[in-house]
Structures are given as C-alpha cells and as structure tokens.
Image 1 (tube, rainbow, N blue to C red):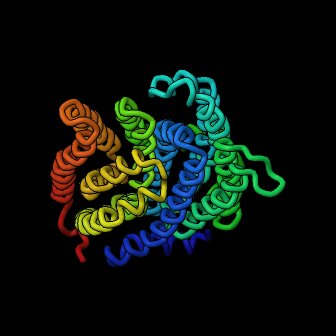
Image 2 (cartoon, rainbow, N blue to C red):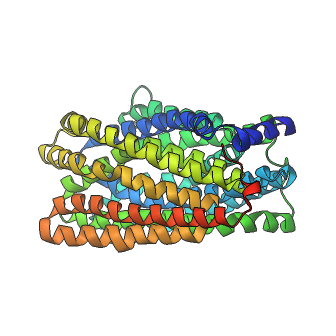
Image 3 (tube, rainbow, N blue to C red):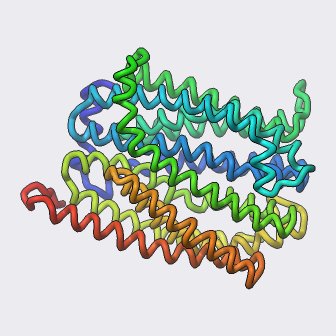
Length: 462
C-alpha cells in the first residue's frame, strides 16, 4: 500500500462518522465470516455423514484446535493494536517493521506448536474424555491439522496487519477463498470421488490444509508486493526483538485470554461426555452453530479494535467511548433477532446435521436455550476487544478469567449436578448475564476516567 493510501485509510478511521465507519469496516468481515463459518459447518456435515463416532471425534478436537487458533488470534490482536496505534500517530515506518516482526514471530511459534501438539495427541485427548475407540479418528485428523498450523497462523496475523490499516475487504477475501477450497475438497477427499481414495476424517483435515495453504501464499503476496505493508527481508535480531516486544505485551495476555476459552470448553466437553456420544456430537454441532449465530459480534470484534486503536493513538477518546456504546446497543438488538430465528428453525437445523434421534433431540434443546445468552456474550467479547485496542491486555485477560472460571464453568457444573444436561445449557445463559453486567460497568468507568483525564480542547465530539 502506498503511503498516500495508508494515510487516507488512517484519516477515515480518525475523522469520518463513527457509525458510518464501523459499518464500512464491519460489513466485509460479516460476509467473510459467514462464508468461512458456513464452510466450517459444511465440513462438520460431511464428517457427520461418516457416523456418530466420527462426528464425536471431530467434536473432541474443537477445544484443542481453538486453543491453537486462540494463540494466533492473540498475536493478531497484539499486531493490530500496535500497528493501528502507530498509524494513528503517523509512524508508518515503524508500523511496517512491526508487521514484519509479527509474521516472523508467528512462523516460529507455529512450528513449535506443531511439534508439541503432534507428540501429545493421546495424552491431551484422553484427558478430555475421549475413549480408546475414538482416538484413531482423532489422531488421523489432528496430525495433519497440526502440520497445517503454519498455513493457518500466517494468514490470520497477516489479516490483522491489513485490518490495522483499515482494510477489511482483503481479509474477507482471504477467509472466503480458503473456506471455499476446503468445502470443495471435503467430499472429494472424505468419500473418495473420482480418482481420489476415500480418506474419511483424514480427508477433512487435508482439505483444510490445502485451503489454508492457498490463503498463506495469497496473504504474503498482498502484504509484501501489492500493499508493501511488510519489509521485503528478514529483520535483524535487534529489530526483531524490538518489533515483537510491544506486540507480545498485548498479544500474550490476549492469547492467554483466548486460550482460556477452549480450556473451559474442554472441561464442559468432558462433563457433556458423561452423557454419551450423542451428547458430545450435539454439543460439537451446537458450538459450530454458535459461531454462525455470533457472526455480527465476531465481525465487530475484528473491526472495532483498529478503529479504537487509531483513535486511542490520536487521543480521540470520545470517539472510542461512542464507538463502544454504539456497538453494544447494536449487538444486543441483533442477537435478540438472531435468537428468534434460531429458535424458530431449531428442529430443521438439528435434522440437517444428524439423522440419529437422540442427537437431534439434544441439539434442539441446545438451540432453544443457549442462544438466549449470545447478546450478553457479545458485550463481553466487545469489551475484551476494546480493552486490548486501548493497550489494556491484562484487563481483557482478567475479564475472560472471570467469565470462564468464576461464572461459566462453576455455574454450568453446579447446574448439571442439580438439573442434568439441561442445567449446563441454562447455566451458560446465567453466566453470560453476570459477566456482561460486570464488563459493561468496568469498561464505562475506564472510558469515563480516561475522558476526564484529557482537556476538553483535545476531545473532538461529533
């Protein structure tokens, strides 16, 4: 990207109307995530056709795969916050060096994670409650998935560089392209169409690898050649350390906060596993559907931080506060409408993903209850994003600890003891309500304090 274009994008985030700018940033992300997550659901659908055991096996992988993805998200959060603040302050050369260091760090960490992950598959999944007859399916999938980690990590962090510069469209294209390749290859490799052998659950992992690989090469071309947002060389050691230090100050707590989610999900999965394969299969499908239902929240959680960081860097804290409250109000209305739609279609949705009566029954109950808390969960997600964007990663970390291990896991466990599996579903709604109230009050107090600390002449109200 030329300096002129970069400056133009930065000015858009600093000076244009808040609602208009957030819509411009968020709409491409919604489209990209819809496509990507739809492809993910198709992936689950094809694996489900192999049988309940295969569907249960891939459901067991979700907490682990999301743990790895959470590290990448954390690095992306740190990268976006640092680069967007530098761009907001007008330091484009330092932003370019930071982006290069972020990608180098991501590559190193991805290789380390792949080695650790592959060697610990039996131990980790046994602890999650997977039985011996499911471990071969899990191993077939996860060995390839871990090996593909580099092709996942680099595009995720590369997309964060683009978002920090105000470009939301290109990351959407990258996500959509990778997802489309994945969904096209899924039935071919899983069931053995044409000259390809039937690889079963392993075929789903290979399709994912190829889709991510395409995204990997495309994002490097965009960053290095087309937009020139990274250096065309490896950084020197001192440059690398300097570039990574600020990113890690935000990225490590953000990664830690995100990695707590799959840990909590793993605990809940282990509790759910006591109710049988069918319960785990339904729980896994419900988790995938949750991502679709939260599409607007997740899109805003990616588009809001660059806006907040650039305005934070330019000391326009009134715009930060207005953007946060506007986003909160919007997702609450949006998620209420989403709940009504999901509840209306619950029986039809459940029958699409399984033909086993017990799986369908549990999934319908899940869809009637759990989505009630998605708007409340959205408040927590957007508050976390705002904390990270304001370079307050420890606040985001503690908020996530509070949500998962003070509210979600204890409440769901106690509710399961008293009311069985349905107690877990209602417990998640109650937990989201408690944390949402704390998150909203906490963030408002911080923003009001920061606004009170700057002279009125420096605050630009619209």
